Image 1 (cartoon, helix red, strand yellow):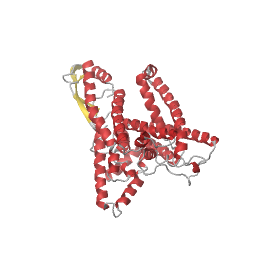
Image 2 (cartoon, rainbow, N blue to C red):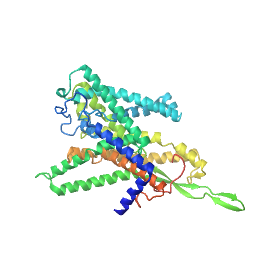
Image 3 (spheres, rainbow, N blue to C red):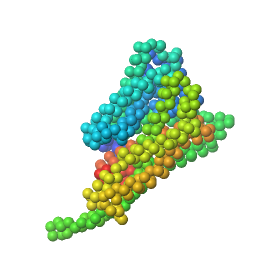
Image 4 (cartoon, one colour):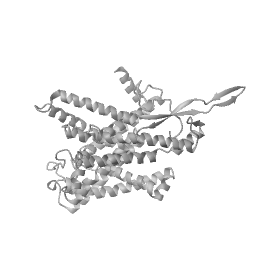
Length: 447
């Protein structure tokens, strides 16, 4: 306990880190307050939630927005339209030459792509907002006026853009990873209530009692550990640096000759495949809204997160997005060039193209089991719900919620760890595997 207090004291001794943490907390507080502000003209006392039995995709979307979706908040659509726009822009970066050119233009190209993403976010939100209003805001709770509808759509668009702005400010002025942090805050806001509901249900005469509840906690802990192993798992490739003799005055000095390691993550894409796949899986909600109901087979199966077809498509998309995001974030040719310039090589592998091919093959081999394991954890909530766990609490048995929370928390801890180590303080833990503590890593840029 004393070490923990000392670590907290060290964190707040660093002025820049203290400012970034306080800025992040302030922006998160603004986001949470906004999620409780109901759309102007909506009668919150007559507002009916569209969630129902808790086993629909609507409940997952509400979980992502911290309940703002079912409260008809100004942040009801949250950050998900921005995620959808980001997916579209990144896909265009593969297929459209204009976007490929922007990717190669450095900072100016990224700024232009960010601007296009923002414009596309406005368009997507403007399309989703009317469907949300007509389908998920009870007709008795909202005015029946065209002028009000226009105002509500504008408000929802502004709310989504404000959430996006908050995420960007957290990335720039806070502790980073702003968009993912906003999603995590929305998810974790529902955890205490879901935990109490599950505890209450187990304490009922036919609920199984305290032993069953403790067993569920043990299983949840096991899933959390498995998720951490997935996020933190790496495949280390040995790197050997050539020996060089440098003459300094009359004394020759030997440089190089050391062996280090290039860490390749089993899940290099992080939580982004989950976020991307989940954003696309929300499309059936809006399609059903425009169709005027959910009586058809497609809407029934793809709006129920416990259905076979929902989980099959969801898992398949996670595998595909894992490969896609790994391909655009890991450049084996760049790795090979950096090693060659630094005088390093992989033992038994020729420098240059052979090294790039070797790294690419290793990434392909470790990405397959990583993506399958990621998909398995993502669909675990369906099995938890079918096993009798309360649907609100089942979301945290793996799935998008748990993976995002684990990934974002570990990234945030890594940021704080780096600040502490740079100021020559002890890290968050004297032992552990938070990435950033291991000094035995290849120092090349981009690795």
